[in-house]
Length: 180
Ligand SMILES: Nc1nc2c(c(=O)[nH]1)N[C@H]1C(S)=C(S)[C@@H](COP(=O)(O)O)O[C@H]1N2
Ligand SMILES: [Mo]
Image (cartoon, rainbow, N blue to C red; front, side, top):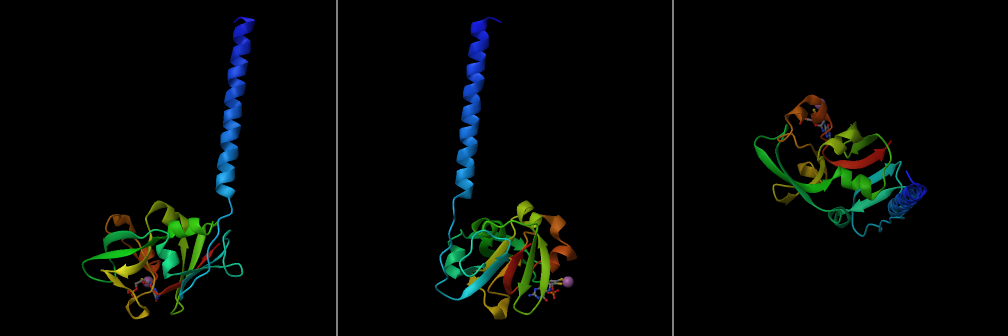
């Protein structure tokens, strides 16, 4: 190695280091950018509380129908443990809701209007497209038909989800998710 070669090498490394650090800074700036959530303008369908970074009502994040829809409606066609046949569900992926509120935790404590509650591990919604369904076979769900929000696991596509554990997490009439 000549002195010139060593010098050039050092400069290239130095430059790469700078590019790396600048990229990291940009990524950090991007993710820490203060997200905000508007206030609901119609009935609150979902409240997310606990360890979240984005709130719109005293430490909680409240969503009305329009706010949920704005997160990006998805469609899942699946069989269901409670109803015969194949059903079409439209709603928001729980992972998208967690992103919107900047959730930080490993469990979601889900509570329903009828008082039912169960813990949904965050890994479920990371590993599978678990949905908060709002529309069932083309119809907006009401409390009387398991709505307004029903946790739907894509059990048709992932047979390993066809058991009691995931049935118990398939909360209908969901009201609140607490990030823990
Ligand atoms: N809101 C609500 N969701 C619920 C329940 C409930 O009682 N209330 N029961 C859970 C349990 S324990 C199971 S096994 C499944 C199926 O209940 P089912 O067999 O009574 O339809 O729904 C789950 N979701
Ligand atoms: Mo159950």
